[in-house]
Image (cartoon, rainbow, N blue to C red; front, side, top):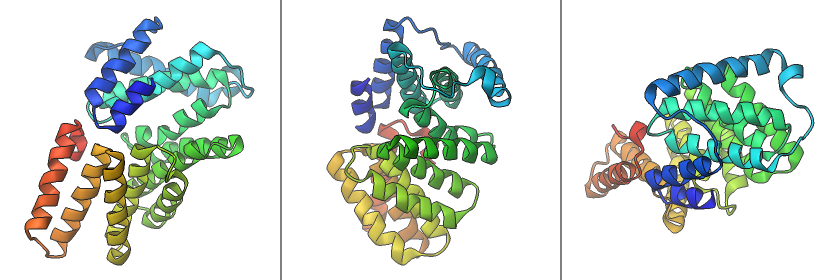
Length: 274
C-alpha cells in the first residue's frame, strides 16, 4: 500500500483508491461498494462498534494478538477510508468502522492507534464531538505508550481539527503547534498539512494575524518542496482568503485563490471547493 500512500500525497486520489481497492481484492477481503451495500455495511459495522464500546471485555483485546494478514488489511482499509473522505463520506465512514472493528480484536498497536485517531474526523461528521475527542485521546495515549511519534503527531493534527470544529480555538492552536513540531521531517505531509491548516484557521478566527502569515508562508514552502498538492491548495486558499478579508485584493491574492481552486479540483477535494 506504499504506492497508494505515495499517490495520495501527490494528490492523485483516484489512482490511490484503485491501487488500495485492488490490494484488498487480491487479499480476498469482502467490502461493500454499491451505495445500498455501503449503507448496509455502515449499519452492520456501527452495531459492532457499539457492542465493542459497551462490552469491551467481550469484544476488544487488551493484549496484542498480531496477525500479519489482519494488520495489512486494517492498514489498507484505513488508507482507503482516508482516500474516500473527500469524495464519498459514506464509504469513508464504512471502511473506517470496518478497519476499527477488526483492529480492536488485534489489541494495542500502531494500527489501532491510527484508527482511533481517524475517529476524530469520522465522528465530527455527525457531529458527535464527545466521541471524536474520546477516540482521539485514546489514539494519542496509545501512540505515546508505543513511542510512535508519527501517530502522536497525527493525533494532535486531528485534535486541532476537532477543536476548530467544536469552536475551541485555544485548544486548536495548542494541538496544531504540537502536531507541526512532531510531524516536520517525518514524511507525513498530508497530516502535517492538517496540523498547519486548522491551526491557521484558529489563528485567523481569534484575530492573531501576526502569527498567521509567517506560519502560512512556512506551510506553503513545505508543501511546494514535498509536492503535496492538496495541502498546498489549502495553504494558498487560506492566504488568499485572509488577505481578501483584511482588504488586500490584488493580483497576487486572486492568483492564490485561483491556484488553490485548481489544486483542490485536481486532487478531487470536493468538500474544500466552494
